[in-house]
Image 1: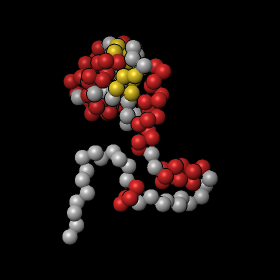
Image 2 (image 1 turned 30 degrees about the horizontal axis):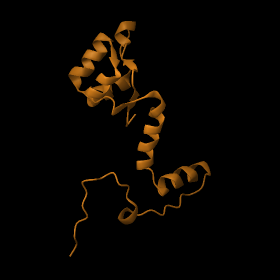
Image 3 (image 1 turned 30 degrees about the vertical axis):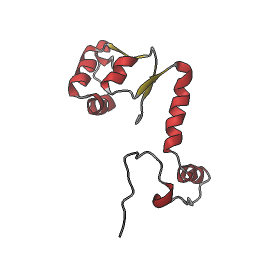
Image 4 (image 1 turned 60 degrees about the vertical axis):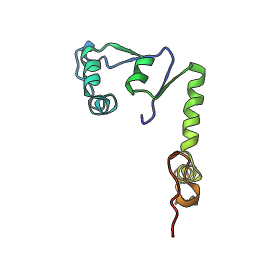
Length: 122
Protein backbone atom coordinates (compact mmCIF):
# COMPACT_ATOMS: atom_id res chain seq x y z
CA UNK A 1 0.00 0.00 0.00
CA UNK A 2 1.88 3.02 -1.24
CA UNK A 3 -0.84 5.53 -0.38
CA UNK A 4 -2.95 4.72 2.66
CA UNK A 5 -6.31 6.39 3.34
CA UNK A 6 -8.48 5.47 6.32
CA UNK A 7 -12.15 5.93 7.15
CA UNK A 8 -13.15 8.16 10.07
CA UNK A 9 -13.83 5.88 13.04
CA UNK A 10 -11.87 2.94 11.63
CA UNK A 11 -9.53 0.99 13.86
CA UNK A 12 -6.58 -1.17 12.96
CA UNK A 13 -4.11 -3.23 14.87
CA UNK A 14 -1.11 -5.47 14.60
CA UNK A 15 -2.60 -8.04 16.97
CA UNK A 16 -0.15 -10.88 16.42
CA UNK A 17 1.12 -10.73 20.03
CA UNK A 18 -2.43 -11.12 21.34
CA UNK A 19 -2.75 -14.30 19.31
CA UNK A 20 0.59 -15.70 20.44
CA UNK A 21 2.24 -15.51 17.04
CA UNK A 22 5.02 -13.41 15.56
CA UNK A 23 4.15 -10.65 13.06
CA UNK A 24 4.22 -11.68 9.43
CA UNK A 25 7.23 -10.55 7.42
CA UNK A 26 5.68 -7.60 5.60
CA UNK A 27 4.72 -5.94 8.90
CA UNK A 28 8.18 -6.33 10.38
CA UNK A 29 9.79 -4.96 7.24
CA UNK A 30 7.49 -2.11 6.21
CA UNK A 31 5.94 -0.86 9.45
CA UNK A 32 9.19 0.47 11.01
CA UNK A 33 10.01 2.23 7.73
CA UNK A 34 6.62 3.96 7.73
CA UNK A 35 6.15 4.92 11.40
CA UNK A 36 9.61 4.44 12.91
CA UNK A 37 11.06 1.58 14.93
CA UNK A 38 9.78 2.79 18.30
CA UNK A 39 6.16 3.18 17.20
CA UNK A 40 6.23 -0.09 15.23
CA UNK A 41 7.64 -1.97 18.22
CA UNK A 42 4.97 -0.60 20.54
CA UNK A 43 2.15 -1.47 18.17
CA UNK A 44 3.44 -4.99 17.51
CA UNK A 45 4.39 -5.78 21.12
CA UNK A 46 1.14 -4.57 22.68
CA UNK A 47 -1.26 -5.52 19.90
CA UNK A 48 -3.48 -2.60 20.90
CA UNK A 49 -6.00 -1.12 18.49
CA UNK A 50 -5.03 2.10 16.69
CA UNK A 51 -7.56 4.82 15.87
CA UNK A 52 -7.80 6.47 12.46
CA UNK A 53 -6.56 9.74 13.95
CA UNK A 54 -3.50 8.06 15.48
CA UNK A 55 -2.79 6.30 12.18
CA UNK A 56 -2.69 9.68 10.42
CA UNK A 57 -0.71 11.40 13.20
CA UNK A 58 1.93 8.64 13.07
CA UNK A 59 2.28 8.83 9.30
CA UNK A 60 0.81 5.36 8.80
CA UNK A 61 -2.16 6.77 6.90
CA UNK A 62 -2.27 9.84 4.65
CA UNK A 63 -5.70 11.14 5.64
CA UNK A 64 -9.09 10.28 7.12
CA UNK A 65 -12.31 10.44 5.14
CA UNK A 66 -15.99 9.87 5.85
CA UNK A 67 -16.99 6.41 4.71
CA UNK A 68 -18.91 7.73 1.71
CA UNK A 69 -16.03 9.96 0.58
CA UNK A 70 -13.21 7.42 1.00
CA UNK A 71 -13.45 5.85 -2.42
CA UNK A 72 -13.83 9.23 -4.13
CA UNK A 73 -10.69 10.48 -2.35
CA UNK A 74 -8.74 7.40 -3.46
CA UNK A 75 -9.95 7.81 -7.05
CA UNK A 76 -8.92 11.49 -7.04
CA UNK A 77 -5.37 10.52 -6.02
CA UNK A 78 -5.21 7.86 -8.72
CA UNK A 79 -6.48 10.31 -11.34
CA UNK A 80 -3.62 12.69 -10.53
CA UNK A 81 -1.11 9.88 -11.00
CA UNK A 82 -2.69 8.52 -14.21
CA UNK A 83 -1.67 9.22 -17.81
CA UNK A 84 -2.44 8.10 -21.34
CA UNK A 85 0.57 5.81 -21.15
CA UNK A 86 -0.70 4.23 -17.92
CA UNK A 87 -4.01 3.41 -19.59
CA UNK A 88 -2.18 2.12 -22.67
CA UNK A 89 0.05 -0.09 -20.54
CA UNK A 90 -2.95 -1.75 -18.88
CA UNK A 91 -4.84 -2.08 -22.17
CA UNK A 92 -1.87 -3.60 -23.99
CA UNK A 93 -1.35 -6.11 -21.18
CA UNK A 94 -5.00 -7.16 -21.20
CA UNK A 95 -5.04 -7.36 -25.00
CA UNK A 96 -1.69 -9.24 -25.03
CA UNK A 97 -0.06 -6.87 -27.50
CA UNK A 98 2.98 -4.58 -27.46
CA UNK A 99 2.30 -1.20 -25.87
CA UNK A 100 2.22 1.95 -28.02
CA UNK A 101 3.33 4.68 -25.63
CA UNK A 102 2.81 8.22 -26.89
CA UNK A 103 3.41 10.43 -23.83
CA UNK A 104 6.72 12.23 -23.45
CA UNK A 105 8.43 13.54 -20.34
CA UNK A 106 8.84 16.98 -21.91
CA UNK A 107 5.13 17.52 -22.52
CA UNK A 108 3.04 14.98 -20.60
CA UNK A 109 4.61 14.74 -17.14
CA UNK A 110 1.90 14.59 -14.43
CA UNK A 111 1.58 17.63 -12.20
CA UNK A 112 2.80 15.97 -9.00
CA UNK A 113 6.04 17.95 -8.71
CA UNK A 114 4.63 21.34 -7.60
CA UNK A 115 8.11 22.61 -6.64
CA UNK A 116 9.58 21.90 -10.07
CA UNK A 117 10.57 24.85 -12.22
CA UNK A 118 11.70 24.32 -15.76
CA UNK A 119 15.34 25.37 -16.06
CA UNK A 120 16.36 27.77 -18.76
CA UNK A 121 18.70 26.24 -21.28
CA UNK A 122 21.23 28.28 -23.20
